Amino acid sequence: MAEIVLTPGQRAAVESRGCALLVAAAAGSGKTRVLIDRVLDQVIREGRCVDEFLLITFTQAAAAELRGKLLAELNRRLAADPENRHLQRQLSRVYLAQISTVHSFCAALLRDYAHVLELPADFRLADEQEAAALRERAVRAVLEEAYADPSPAVRAALDLPGAGRDDRALQELIVRVYTNLQCYPDPAATADRWEVMLDVTDCTDPGQTIWGEWLLRELQRAARGTQPDSDAPDSPVPTMGGLCLMVGTLAAVGVGWLAACAAQPSLLGSDRQMTSRLLIALLGSLAFGAVGLADDLARIRGRYPNGLGLGLRRTQRLALECIAAVLVLGLLALNGCLPTGLILPGAGYVECALAPLLWAVLLVAMAEAARVADGADGTVCGAAFVAMLGLMMLETQLGWFPLAVFPAALAGALMAFLLWDFPPAKLHPGRCGCLYAAGAIGCIPLCIGYAELSIPLALPFWVEGGMVVLQVLFCRWKGRPLFAAAPLHRWLEKRGMSAVNIFYSLCALSVCGLALAVRLARWA
Image (cartoon, rainbow, N blue to C red; front, side, top):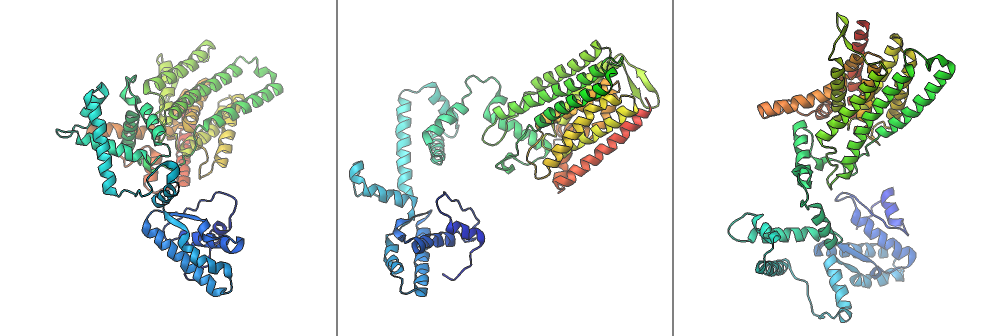
């Protein structure tokens, strides 16, 4: 074996001692070289013998090749140090070293202790054809015993494969399941876990089964044009980062409002009900955030091996969002702060009896639109940050400067989150953060009597949700997708845009929405 200079990483693998060590590298990167050098490093430095090591490979050919390379390296080092008696002894011990496949090593171990295990000393390993015949014989014996007194479960199993006139398909299915189970450390425990996971005895909704969850998730993915779950990273980024935003904002608003009231005590008794409006806006935002939190928790509790579950059912989620919207409108009505009209371009403020219903629909629709962006920090945090800056400016312009403490606090929390979570992301806002941001963008303008301002301020959310709606409707109409992917951030990803550029693009869209909101406020 020619002289090869090891890299620092390879050198560390050769010299590491006293710990479990895993070396993961591509084919041809020098793993065998590192393994041989590690063995010989201990042989030369520590006086060990090569037959004290156990080297396991996948095939007999690989084992023979490894033994040959070890012998060649020993000869090379002995040529450099011909007087080394310890290395000379290793030349004969190479053929005693345990360099073999797992099966060969286990067979040798069983032969050494055959008398203890009461095994015949002349047993041999079955080849693949013999093993297949033994498996088939065992399956036939099990099935014949089951046929003697078939239970309902056996009858259902016979109907399940539905292939041909015999039970050959069932036999093949049993063998495949058995083979897959052998890949797990504890096949029996794994089989018991699978049985519990696949039990649908008490399930009345197919969508709540593991197969229904997977199928619905794949259908949603196909409608959006996103990649399959198998392409997702093995270690997904944690979600529910919205909790950080909620707690941080709540603390900042509390401190800021106490300081404002200490400096201007008249705020507490203002006839404009500053404190009530602030608390209702804060409570409404937290209520929508709580719906998102429940959705995230449902996804985590319902997760399966290939990812998160679907979360709350649509009816449950919409019901909770409607309750949050009604709560906000009800509290505003009780305090006499509920706007009964809306601003129309060119007409100014117009009274409308259906305005409260319109605001409720607006809040729920905004929450649903924001929900589809739970994986994109740029959509959630970037759009909300620009919207909060805009609300600070608009509240000052419209005479509600003290209430700007809420958007200021949330803007600060969003900026801190964005700076800490700059790509690659360490924490996603999740649906909790999405709905909390949407709730704030909707509730703050509503509580100062300018609910229509939330429409342009949430422009990125409307685009995200609108693309998904158009994608679904067009697929139902034409049978093919309208966009290559939906929502917007997925479409931008599909076009090769990086995460940072997507963030900048969505922030630019938010600025456009802010400009429209400023224009709308001038018509008030």
